[in-house]
Every structure is written in C-alpha cells, then in structure tokens.
Amino acid sequence: MAKDLNQRGIENQTEGKVEELKGKIRGDLGDAVDDRDEHVKGRAEELKGKAKQELGDAQRKIDESI
Image (cartoon, rainbow, N blue to C red; front, side):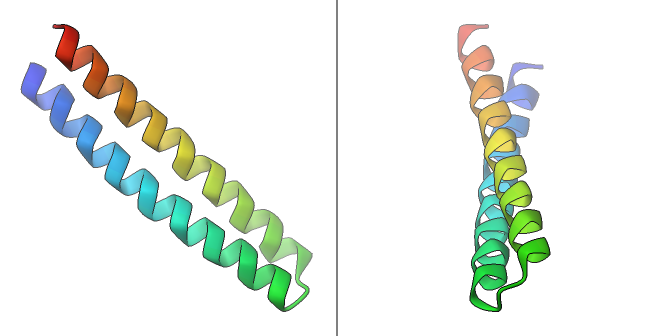
C-alpha cells in the first residue's frame, strides 16, 4: 500500500504541475487578447493544479511516515 500512495503522490504532483502550467498559459493568453473569461478560467485551472500538487505532496509525506 505504501508504494501505491507514494506513486499516486508523484503522479498527482506531476499532473498538478502540468495543469498549473496550462492554466498559467491560458490566463496569460486571456490577458494578451483582452479576454477576461479566458483569464479567469486560466487562473482557476492554475489554482486547481497547485491544489493537486499539494495533494501529491501530502500523499508522499504520509507514505514516508508509514
């Protein structure tokens, strides 16, 4: 079980980083073309990615303590 939790943590960290980067690009693109809707959607995606990274960090820390 411990390896599974660590592996899921690594996957969540990686997926979260990708999602954060995509959101940042989308938000910046929204700024560039003056599209407030895309800006907001991008920033929301960026925050979702950060949250997923935090989940991955927590999963890995729990795995280390088991």
